[in-house]
Length: 394
Image (cartoon, rainbow, N blue to C red; front, side, top):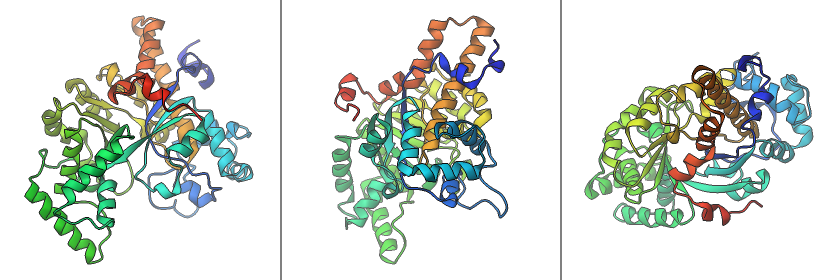
């Protein structure tokens, strides 16, 4: 049977038993959601759909109706109204647990700095998903917490070093949202101590005058990044498509080229997250720099029926040992479920295409699938079996 003629379930079957390590995601909400709140979680816009329209009319919305509806006990392509009624009938906790436990994700690396009071923390995710969960620290949020706690400009550098070291005793890596806050076209080197102190003093003055404690100073962000580099961290970078407050043209990973040159022998690993529409650029960087890895997590859900093509494009130039799986799911458990299902389907179909064209052996296709599904992430984050043994599933 040709790949195009397969049902999605059959397409997934041969790699369906491979566990997935979701190296970048957030927690889910277990609240029972009304329609407006649910729709806000299935778009990257910060606006409601125009009057008389719905965010269900999208690739993601159709994927939810096709694949998530049966998990909740409905027929495929149940109406949005029927789907949301069933979700409310089950309750937020039950619906989330059903979807999470159907993903085949064994391990979650959860970035905890975004709206953490609305979603499950790593321990809560581990319980809900019956999986292991690990923390990733958002650098900018860590700095903001210091300012909220009353840190002064002169003591900021030492205080940040201390709290970062404390968090890294348990966290598997760090994340930066420099792309959101300053763009990726920042000066690539570290700032001087004097420049850092002056920048923090100016930031404190702005907050004292009533500005929100939101870090968007390039000098301070550069300091945070180099603090992580100096510790040889796994450093995640938001790349490309995301929330409405990004300037997409400043989120191209090629803008990081000089930073990557300067850090390639540091021991740090750079993980480029989701990357669409710059996933080909990310693939180039993953090929030429030994410490660069990438995924297309966010794009898999939002491109739905076109996700096969996006996944295949990641396999064009990048070494297979540099590609990772992620869902970048936040809030709605549907995003975890679809991220896993569509990833497996797209990877399977791409590898099958290579087999038809060039006789790739089944054992080699299986090996490549395992690399991308979980082995590459363990290597990139320098985690061995002992780490996972210490974090057994609940």
